[in-house]
Image 1 (cartoon, rainbow, N blue to C red):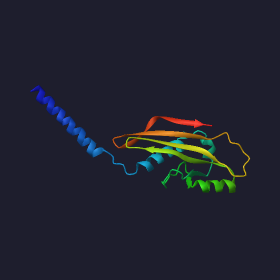
Image 2 (image 1 turned 45 degrees about the vertical axis):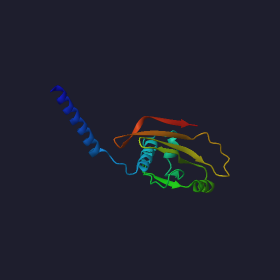
Image 3 (image 1 turned 90 degrees about the vertical axis):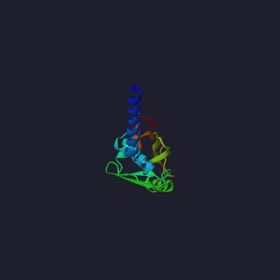
Image 4 (image 1 turned 180 degrees about the vertical axis):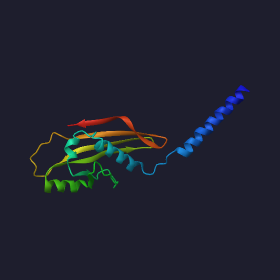
Length: 160
């Protein structure tokens, strides 16, 4: 009788876990866009991007379209993120002078893990005589639990 109760209990637990997983498992709709938005918020809204103080005063923050596939980026800090091609960024620097912009250097996403690297880089005009010793980046890693992306507890940051 004891083995029978134990078997029944194990069966009930397995059924409950299976039903919980089926009903509460979040299906991915657009993981890449979701993760890019999370990484931007961590870097800018939380201010975790090194040298962020150089960028935060800009009315509009320029973001390179390189590696983005036309994702829609969120408004952050009541400022607009303006996506430009590398060519447009260079043209803007040539017309208006040197400025910092954000660039997604690496976006790596699989079924359970993801990492997104954002660099804060200088766009330098062809006529510039400046040598910049600033620039920075952040790598945010995520893992998936029951279909929901969670940020890892550590981030990689660099500053030049």
